[in-house]
Image (cartoon, rainbow, N blue to C red; front, side, top):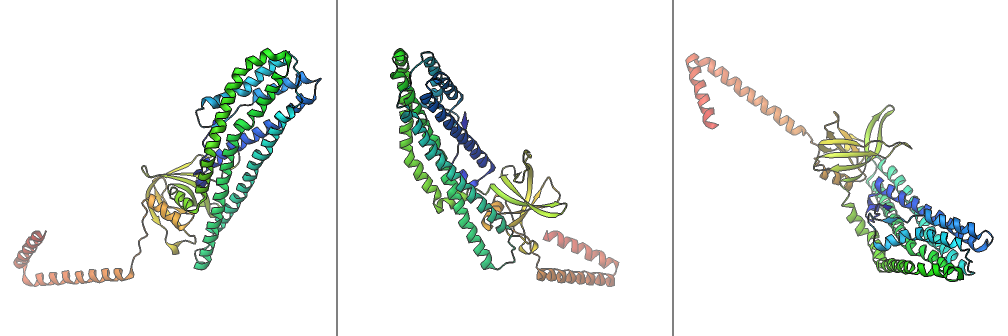
Length: 420
């Protein structure tokens, strides 16, 4: 079966889907490591246990039959299909060899055990080390991010700038470790196609060619062996041709300019802290949010889920977005969102000032309205002047009599009509 693609660009989003994809590869890597450990153990049993040779080979063939290769993507090439089906072919062949009681060659350890141990130690071991570094940098970065977002906006500008610079450095370290981890996963996924299959193929070939009782069976195996060798060589050639490109891509993704470029793709998707009212008072809850501008729909996935439970995402329809006034809240990077589903505005906190601008730009956000005391005073004076003028008009009309009053009113109406 195929796993979801693991892209370098996903390292900069670090979304829940990216973390779930990593878990799939980590579980598959652990499964491969356990498989290799068991395969090496079974190979030694075949080599050393002459009396129990028949049982050992049978167990070895069962182990091969139970394992299935996983590849990236939904469709497989002909070479990958041949590689994926190779262990099942090997298992079937060993079952036939078992009936002939074939003798084991003396150099089987060099052909099988050492290459598998080398792959397990160097490739899988290196991947686990990259995982430890990634988890360490991830924990360090998000811990610092939580502390950073809890800084009061009333602190000195120099202190806030120093905190921002420290967070930027930790973010770069985290992205670097994430990209290196994804690169190592790609390495071990590609190398296992030939580093694991080739030793097994060589071991089987030595068994078949050095046993006089199975010469005919060996001849029958040769066409498939040649086809499989071609598939393995194609996989190796593909790996060697793309390895340099993959390494160069990794270096470009680690460059600071690329980090800044990738952040431009995040305004519609990323982490936000939402202010929520709870029994013990207001608290800030972390969400991974996705905003669809066409339908003005904001999808919020809580990052504080309890174990063994899966919460449904919260979907809100936006009406408006307004930046929160600096002196109205003791948090930085805040903005309010009015939604169709809730009566009161929802207050969010972005990860930085630049992040808030991106969210507000995506949501067509506006600046808050400030009422000036000078304009308010001018409005009151204008209303008072108009009231005095109307009062004088009424006094003048009362002194001129009813007929003049009617004539004045008609003239006033005609003059208003002409101006309109």
